Length: 259
Ligand code: GLP
Image 1 (cartoon, rainbow, N blue to C red):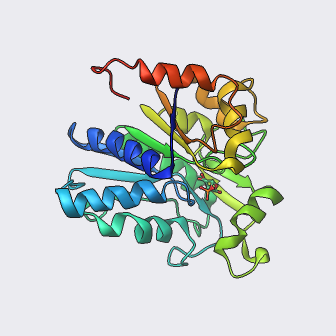
Image 2: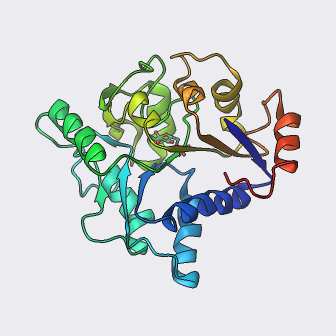
């Protein structure tokens, strides 16, 4: 893992956008997109680069990470709607290039299998953006998710439902069930970009990066990946024991070496 501590969320967004831009400029790119508030700054920066600097997504496609079960696709809080509203509708992805899970699929297990096949057919994901839940979840892989899990149904913890209640008219409206890419699915992406912002995420980031590899902190599964970049602001980095080493590593990073 490469741990990159940056002064503030804007610096995190710019660095994340640099990584996505490099992938786009490398030829056909398959992006993995997370929802939640954490990547919004990155998406805003990518939209700005598209508008002001001509950054193009015309040769890219994207897969969302997860979806609430039971929400119609057109529901404003379905992740299919959120990712379009917050990001993809404002840039130039080709028609049909944004792939999402169907939260209303009559057979969710068949939908999960279809999604796995679609990711494989696209050649796998080049860069997967990830946020982290306060309980250490990535996607919607709640604690005790199998480290070998594939896309499937999960039941949200009460903590996650409370955390996400701000997006719904009332806490009872947050669905109990979701479809999410599994931890093994996520780990097949070629580059993982985990973003943590703010002190509320500091314990989860510390457990993911420096804690034991354990199902109790699903994000710790990223320790098994050969190319994970963790971008954090000062708040999210505040519980990292080895932060001095990470800062030293960044200062000494060879100019030829990219993220
Ligand atoms: C949500 C999403 C995750 C997201 C996480 C953190 O429940 N399923 O993909 O990373 O929780 O959300 P936020 O970025 O709003 O803190």
